[in-house]
Amino acid sequence: MELIQIGEHALKVMLTKEDMEYYAIEFERLDYENTETRRAIWNILDEAKRTLGFEAAHDGLYIQAFKDKGGGCELFVRRMDTPREVSLRRVLFRFSGMRPLLSACARLQNCGFSGASTAFSGDDGALYLTLSGGTGVSPFSYLCELGTSLPYSEAFLAEHAKPLCENAVSALSALR
Image 1 (tube, rainbow, N blue to C red):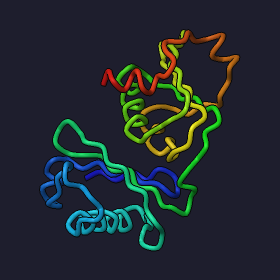
Image 2 (image 1 turned 120 degrees about the horizontal axis):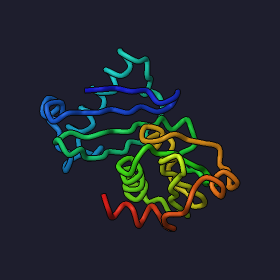
Image 3 (image 1 turned 90 degrees about the vertical axis):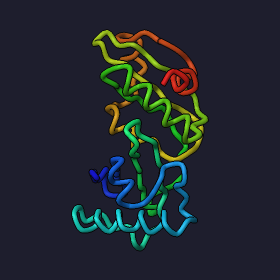
Image 4 (image 1 turned 45 degrees about the horizontal axis):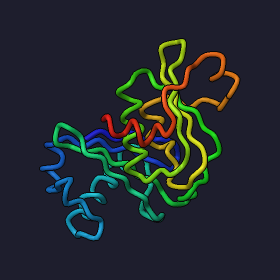
């Protein structure tokens, strides 16, 4: 198991297939209403508190789970003392290649992202994704693991990038 604290309010948990067996959980049966799942989550969060000081016991939690090809999964845990719902203005992310961009779009699609999105190809070889509008859980907790958040700049995109596709979240998530 690998624990990575993402800011003050968020945690990324990477579980291997062996970790899933140790905690006696299966991705397809993850349900926080299930006692075994809840026990496993709290054991993981207790470990996060011991090793990272991440305190989750007194706050509401929002947990997202993503299956991993090796039989494990990634959990993103966000304490609810930060806003749960956000209305996105324009944000810009830079990705080093197609794989992280496709992963980001798939995760946004799975989370129900409903805003506008456009993918760009940069003259520096990087790929860019703009997001705007819509509401939903902030994408920053996991997109920052896949790419780099940049200040939004129409001038930068116009000068250094070419549009690849509109509705990028929907279109590119289907390619993953």
